Length: 378
Image 1: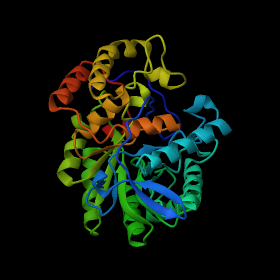
Image 2: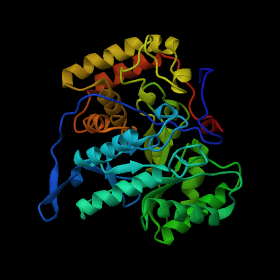
Image 3: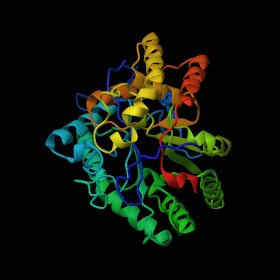
Image 4: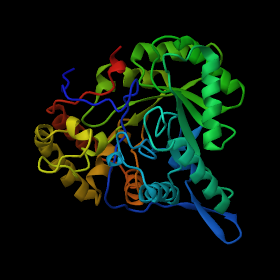
């Protein structure tokens, strides 16, 4: 697979991407449930949720990634302040108000390890507590991740890290716990740790992230021996980055009944139409999505915009819907504010035609992709 030579590592051992978007939102039909007193909290109907792999966990067809919350090493123009905090809280509440209740974080997001300002888990936990004080019956699904750092060895390290995450989240358990990336060693012990977490009632489902086809199959088989399904594999996947299709990861997920969770589903904002050759993204993203790359991207963006206009949808919503159309895929775009959260929610509840899906794939195939997370090729 051809790859661009310019890429950025936000911090050591961690190369992950989340995406951003903007625009308008077409409200979906919601089921409203009374929480307490006169307070009413919106909730998604069961028909709007899907099972995560072979687990019993059901989540919304689109989730929200929260890497940017508390981060000042890659996002937020290297700054974190009260204004950005309020915006993140707005993104959280607006997601729930519009029926999206699945949030994906990680212990390294915003952490001191990644030179962040405040842990994303801490912020998410605070937002959940405040939400439940207002709506005691609010249902919120939380996914977080274990960092496979070189000095972490064995299954015990997984449980220790998980308990630390639970403390920051102010929760007794999480819905999905994932291995953030393959370790340099100790991967079998990490998988055993995931199984232990399920058996100890600390998680409802377990998954992996940035796993190749072989690693995915090995993880699936090791957990299967304990009667535990591998629920998901979270990988970089978008209309302009289709490595999971080319490496066999997508096909393996479909075969094994493992849900593919797509991070960077709008290519860190490149598919929103917000950026142009004259207005590239700032910060590290500008080294990835260069003026040259954005120039080559314009024909695809123009067609995405045209198709969206036929549905009264934004380019962001079209790009996300294209992923959903692949089947067995849950996109998790990252929302920095309420406006983005509203727009993301409008990406589901409708469908592109098969011809439109194929046309966009053909146009995107003419674009040389940027590099993703290198370990996916190991």
